[in-house]
Image 1: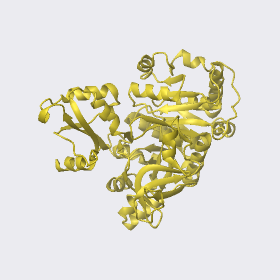
Image 2: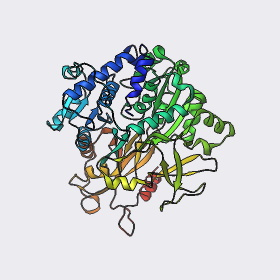
Image 3: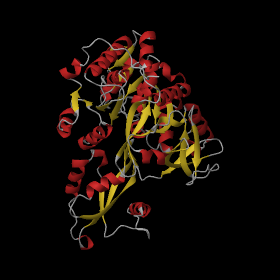
Length: 507
C-alpha cells in the first residue's frame, strides 16, 4: 500500500478541512493539498524520475514540506528528509549516499548546499519559480508500489560516526501510523503543531493526523509569537517536543501559562526525561497532557510509551522508578531485553533492548553488514541498554554505543574526534557526553596535545573554528580538557568511563 493513500482518503472525507497551516492562517485544505501533491507527482515523473528513485529534503519547517513528501510518494519515489541543523558537508554526504538526483532545500540552506554539491545533484529552492514549475502538469494518478518499497530514508549515525540511511518502507510507515492511532486515544481529534523538525518524529507523527483529516500547523521556528498565535488560532493543539523544549515551555518567556489549556497533548521523547523534570512538567501542564514515547529511526517513534494514565498512576503511588521508565510496549510491537549472546533476560536484568514488528526498518541503505548486525532473527537490536520490570515497564540505563543526546539530537563522539584529529597539534582525543541542565547532555573533548607534557597546546578558538568548519554547531565540544595521556585498557581501548569520572571529580 502506498502511504500516500492516507492523503487520498482524507481528501475525499475531509476535502474542505484545513490540512496545512501557518500559525496564523490556513494555507491548504485537504482537497488542495491532494491536488498539489498529485501535480508534483506528475512534475517529478515528467522530469525523468521513476518509482524507487530518491529525493532528498534539506529543509527547515515550512508549509511545502508535506506536499513534497506526498508528491514524491504519489510518484512512487523515496524521500530522504535530513535534519535542518546539519552542516552543509553532512547534507552533501547524505545526498550522495542516498543517490538522490534532486534535493529540495529551503532558502537559508539552498545556496551553500548547491555550491557544495557542485552539480552532482540538482537543488531546487522551495520559494522559487523552478519549484512552482513542477506543479504545472495535470495531476498524476498514484503509483502502485509494494509494501516493502522504500518510502523514507531516515539518516542516523553509527558507532563510526558515518551516517546510515534506515530504510523505512511503506509498510513500516503504515504500521507506525496504525500503532499511534491505537495508542493515542482521543488526542487525534485535535490538530497538531509542528514545532520540532518535520524531518524527524514530529513529521512522522503528523502522518496519523493526515490520516484523520486534521490540521498540521507548521511553526518555522520555536518563538513565542508564532507559538502563541497558533494556540489562539487552532486550539486544541498537540505537539511533539524533546525534553529540553518541554522544560523551556514552562518558562513564561516562551509560553504564557494562561495558554496551557489550549494544549491537548505533549508527546515527548528523543532524549532522557529526568524524574524531577517530569514531576515539574506534570505540575505545570497537568498529567493528562503528557505522553512519553521511545523509539529510534530504525523503529520510528514506536517501541514503548508512557501515556497519561500510567504517568498519573506512578505519580500517585510515588513510584519514581516507574516515572523514570519509558513505559510499556507499543501496540503491534514485541519488546524484550537480551543478553550479549541474544538470549532473553529475566525481569530486572540489564541487557540490550530488542524490538520486533512491522515498524522495524527493512535495513540500512547500501549497508548489508550493518543490517545483519542490527537485525537478527527478525529482532532489531537497538544498541540501548535497559531492563524490564515484572510489569513490563522498560527503563533505559545506558547506551552501548557512546552516543550523546543533546537537545534531542544525536551526537556520535567519533565524528567529532575525527575532525579534531585534523589539527596538527593534537596527538589524541576522546569525546564524552556530560550532564547539562538545559540540553540533557553536551560533548566535552579530552585532548592530548602533540609534544611533551602539553607544551604545544592548541588554541581553543582554533579548535572551535575547525569543528564549525566540518560539523553542525550543536556538535561542537562545549569544553576542552587538555591532558598528558588518555586512560586505556590493556587492549589499548580508551576508557571513557574513567574520563567521565574525571569530569565529575572536576565539579
